[in-house]
Length: 105
Image (cartoon, rainbow, N blue to C red; front, top):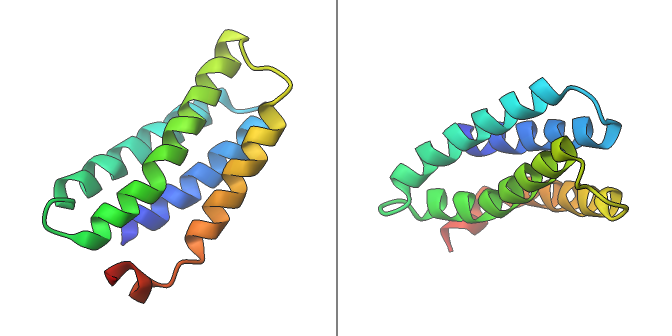
């Protein structure tokens, strides 16, 4: 549970940094911490349905932000960046709103 909430918080912070175009070192550090959280959740996926659902909700958003961060560092990012980040932030907020009881179904 803590890995999930930590990941969401760090991903939101990463999106915020990318939107503002600042703190590249923070973006890298946050993504590294999320990767560690995903690895911890991944260890539990086989035996814990909640961990599996947490991972399936967070991993694609992590990958999207990781790619955006890489593209912004290499100068590849284009005009779609604000739209992509807005979509990711909306998805993260939506994930935060899932009731814990619904994850057991």
